[in-house]
Amino acid sequence: MNPAAPASDDPSSAAFDALVERLNLALPQTQCTRCGYPDCHSYAHAIARGEAAINQCPPGGAEGIARLAAITAQEPSPLNPEHGIEGPRRLAVIDEAWCIGCTLCIKACPVDAIVGSNKRMHVVIDADCTGCELCIPVCPVDCISLADVTPGRSGWAAWSAPQAERARERYRWHELRIARDQRDNDARLEAKAQHKLEHLEEETRLTDTAQIDRKRAVIEAALARARAKRGA
Image 1 (cartoon, rainbow, N blue to C red):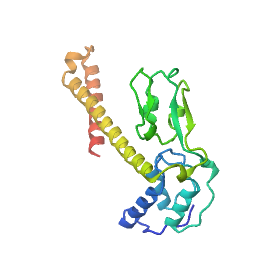
Image 2 (cartoon, rainbow, N blue to C red):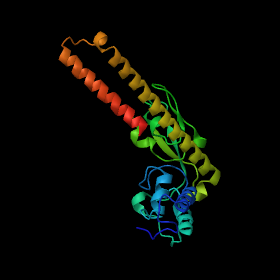
Image 3 (cartoon, one colour):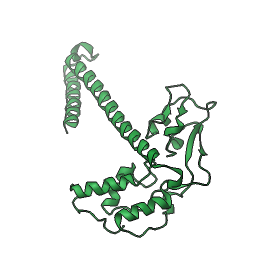
Image 4 (tube, rainbow, N blue to C red):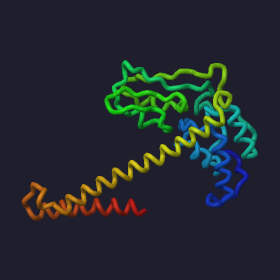
């Protein structure tokens, strides 16, 4: 546990929100999850609450730790090796001869830096790749490698404030797109279920009234859960 950060203990306060934002802006926005949290903002939130140490971000390196230390009035500490080591910026590279177009890397990329379609070769947009490495473990044919693009420079020396801001913005749009796609998919499924409910007698192969009633109850329950989730 790190010492209490200089902000209100109330996580709903404006002072707490301001601290989280300052901490988040001090992070490189690679969204790599190596800190142990799902994204940079979640890590910043955990630091603000005193639940995470300031030395868990390998992409930020020593400079990143110093920035977080200044904000939280703590002494800088070495990067925790459990979360990785500081190194040069790296870019994902897809071997087109091996890529099978499975789209798993596209789904894993937090900043939408990989483009392609199903069963067609995928390509990495170098300017937007944060080197998060999240595409590596999901590739079923091991066709993605990492190339060092800043040899001799690591941490914030290999990553600029404009790059971090662009990555943060792309991640924000990525999250909005995922949420929109989920809403659209939920709406399609709900519409199909509603249609089936309204035409159950016509579309079912069942002939037993009791079985039809049980199926109707299942569909009604599923629709109720979906509507409750949407209204939550």
